[in-house]
Image 1 (tube, helix red, strand yellow):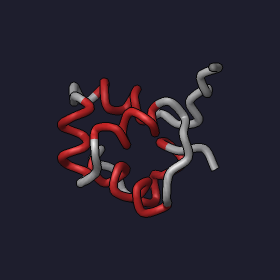
Image 2 (cartoon, one colour):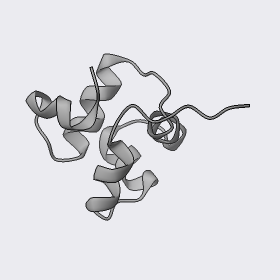
Image 3 (tube, one colour):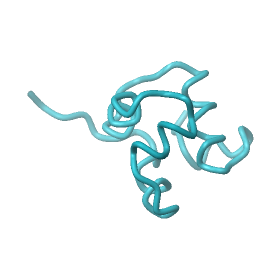
Image 4 (cartoon, helix red, strand yellow):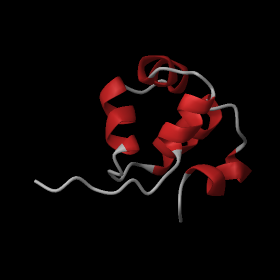
Length: 69
């Protein structure tokens, strides 16, 4: 099974902030599995993207720094 190339910077931004997947998941109100899937490039809902962006301490307007459109 071929792993998808990440289409976002979630892992990089999370690690820059010294956050574990569990801590980011807690802040975003999503599961650790969701964070893991998103970091691996799996698609996610717009609401999940918004939660992750805010949990990283960014504004929704900064979405381009986190997710490719």
